[in-house]
Image 1: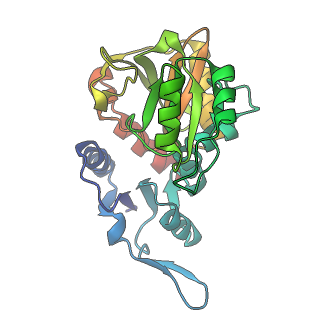
Image 2 (image 1 turned 90 degrees about the horizontal axis):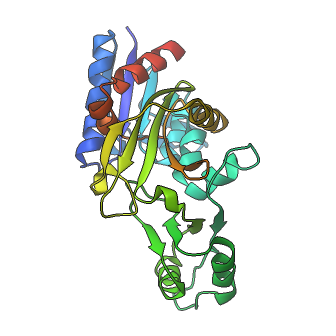
Length: 290
């Protein structure tokens, strides 16, 4: 009998995180596979004095890696454990600017994006020339977002120069980016789940009083059938980033734009509105690989 590890963040206390792990474990059990849910802190790992990496994973055939700890994921792969998603795929999505860089040059439409300069000096003033470039290139409103974060956190909208300067000051010590605001998609987007390179489920997310559509921020989801061009866009995106599983956020404007890619996208919401058993499909894909 195969055995799998489902790994979550050491300090996870959000219901969607726990639900993700428990749903997957239940579906694996129905398929005759034993799994254990552990936090990052329960998986002990080290590099010894001789430079060899070790981790207590000898009894597992695979790991569903529901964390973003880039150090442990490297150690586990060095020990020969197959991760879903892989270390490189998780890192490609964890850093939003890195996601856009990896997708660039591959015919994937994305809202125009400008990386902000890194700042290590709290007292340093924000570079006005940089903001001039953001203002001229992207116009208003403009989106400012931290390169790391999920559930719509640390995503802001600047409507004018004054608010842009305030956001630049707020974020200057945090890796962040600026992005063109797709006004046609204000308060709504399409969340698309891709498993094993194929679109398996999608929903439109709408928010009544926020430019962000995240369900965690009060948005509402509705089942959606992706048109062929969106199917192709999302499947190509997942292939470029080498993802076994992901949630892709698509903005609909004059064309479809990939806004973000989440390697550990929550599926509770999309399961409830579509009736599609995403956990089962992901478990089946994993077993087809291992």
